[in-house]
Image 1 (spheres, rainbow, N blue to C red):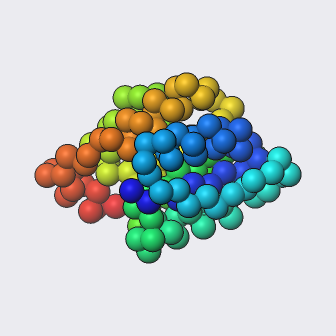
Image 2: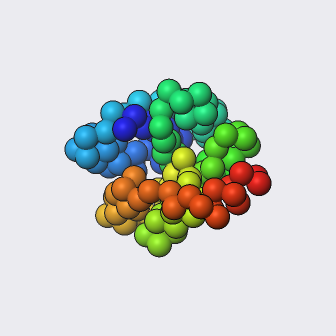
Image 3: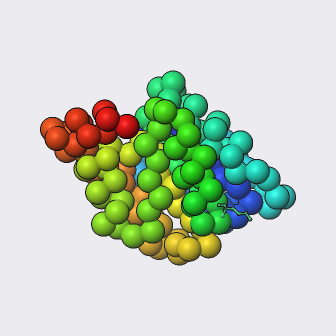
Length: 140
Ligand code: RB5
């Protein structure tokens, strides 16, 4: 699938791990930066990635900052985005099965690269369960 990815300076080290994983998994990646360690404002990257998901240019988005908190707050301001900040694998699965999350947020200063890779794999390979969960997300 086509996946937009973005990060701030706090997330760049983890983006450098996740992006090649996505490509290895056979996904098409639209990297919206940042691509240096210079301090940047995460809401700008959240907005860009979320717009690509909201207008269906990309099916999913992944946003990475230091904690994942700022990115998830900014992403969820877009009414078409259901962003989930995941720090472990159970939430990654449930955010897809029950919430049909279309954006995954990760915290590079919280979640190590090995766990982050597992979270991404699970999040991309889990389908939405629909049914009562569809009714609920339509109430947002
Ligand atoms: C940047 O220092 C940091 O505030 C940002 O990466 C993120 O953690 C915000 O939620």
